[in-house]
Length: 350
Image (spheres, one colour):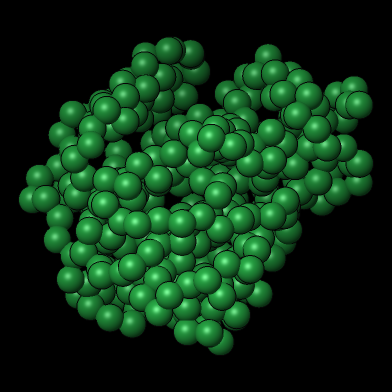
């Protein structure tokens, strides 16, 4: 099976490792500049509940959970447009007030340098979601310096039950969190990840981990209280996952895949070797080809997620019908990438 939730795997932990995710972040941000939360939703809610602003400008291409947590904080929002190449249309900047902020998503590791430079020139206040920019550890420091705040979700990119952070390199974090954890959510996710590991190591399939992880997501989706801190278990795991080791194979997979499908006229990658992430985003020439290829992959035990159905905004973004994400993280190797590449080669597109 390719895709789905991460799972624990052998040699994932390095005891006393100085190159851990935790070590990386705390070397950049001191203890007064970073806070660890349970989920990205907890980060977003707590941040916007704390900072004073007039209007938050958010992209019209995003997942529903981001919007819900912002709305729950009672923050006034307006939308700006994302173009067909996942870049920001900047025509809204001249409509911004002095105390407005812009929420920027680094989609699939893409850093929109043109926008950041224009924002810097015009003293625009930026909050950046860098969840998928971690792989670009040599480039993402650029985002830290220009953004007023950065945030990211660990559970989207690591085998970890919960975890997210919000930080600022320019100022101290005066953000509070609830002094408790999302206990049921963390329990179901921990059991689900362990079950996935057990099945993988022993070579058999089981749907139990799927239902456990689905149960965890259902608990999260039905909860409208935000601000929970990260669980102690995940906090300790974060100190032991080797960041460089975790991303080295992802980089190799990414570059190998992009190189080998570059000449396909029905699909193009919106990422390149300047914007490496744990996902390779594929843009199809039409929705029918996208859906047919996703079905073919599913029939071959490959699950490629759709990012995102934006019908909750009452007008679906054009990208919602064209994109698929290929996971290329450290769980996989060139053999796994070749399975997807071969399906592209045999697929009859139109």
